[in-house]
Length: 290
Image 1 (cartoon, rainbow, N blue to C red):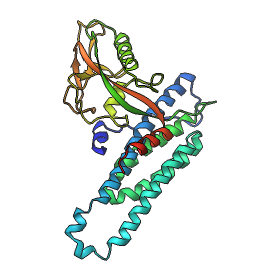
Image 2 (cartoon, rainbow, N blue to C red):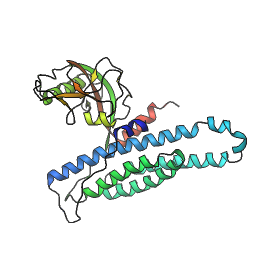
Image 3 (cartoon, rainbow, N blue to C red):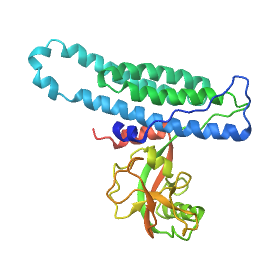
Image 4 (cartoon, rainbow, N blue to C red):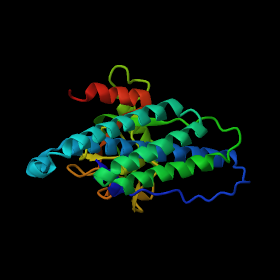
């Protein structure tokens, strides 16, 4: 939901660049990773805006309460609403088609920005959508300082399942724990996901940058994500020098509800696959009830 994304906070890039600066290969990779992560968050937020706009606009409870006063104005409003929803859908398709080139991506973002602002005037979400779009636009401009840059890969992590596993958060290194999380997901992969399934990162869980991620941890154990951003409270007895972050059983999955004092021997991994925009949209189409 929009509220779940908002709870995590939208951090705009604080990187400042001169037009004449040429980045090193390491800086380029860092900027590429930042762009991809920010893009995933922005795409999911905007997608939620579109879906919640449609749901809110189809809610007729208010219209029923004042039907006598609004009987003459509802038909044109319904027409305008349908046109705006269709325009947003077209903008998403344009974003898919133009993602290979940074220049085209900027153009698509500008169009999507305009459509989103028009739609959000009705649904009161303009500030949140604009904030995410501006963060992506800033990162796109920054990447132009990288010579010989190939196209960034824009993919959406899609939730598959959770799996239980045993760990030793007190004695193992972070790398060893991460390897166990990854292996648990591979061992539990369904047909067709064997080569692509992976464990979710802690940052993806914190920011809810995973399509289809449950709102709460409905399992019996704490959910643990991959590093980086996995370190919890300092703990001298642990091999890593710290406890791990986790989401307790029954707790909400977002950055404001994350625990920082986890040392349990039994945890759960969230397993995801990375989908292209086309595959992501196709999956949503096949799972949405008629």
